[in-house]
Image (cartoon, rainbow, N blue to C red; front, side, top):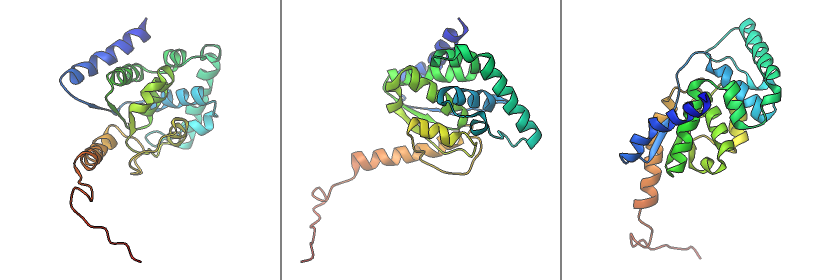
Length: 207
């Protein structure tokens, strides 16, 4: 019940913007503890080890990192029989913010608009959305490659290349804001740049 509500709430957040004419919706996040949820989701979806998936988040020390990994292993073991589908993974490992991001991404994809994905947690949502509705992946643009340890693995799983590499550990929407002008510039080049023929440029070929 809560999963369904969360997905619907995410859709309700983005639909007014889409209906008002927006064709690009960007996703970032700011939270406490949600790198743990995102890492657990990555481990469940990829089958990779917790050690590979779990990073330092905002910069925790070695002792806290060991505790973080142990707790995520415990969660994965506890739910291991109920992680067969992306919906089950989302229900048991995702926080409410990740659930709503997934719902919003699915709604944006259904509307055939661009999804800018920024940061580790948002990419966890993108992984789930693309497993629930594979066509949604074609609407996703990945803003920047996070320094968080598992993000590179997430991008590999999605066969995605981020637009920017800024050595930021947590995105919080910063990468999305910086990526938007690149999308606007690319659109301008594609739609407005003259060809050689349009500009009456004569090509000279050396003999």
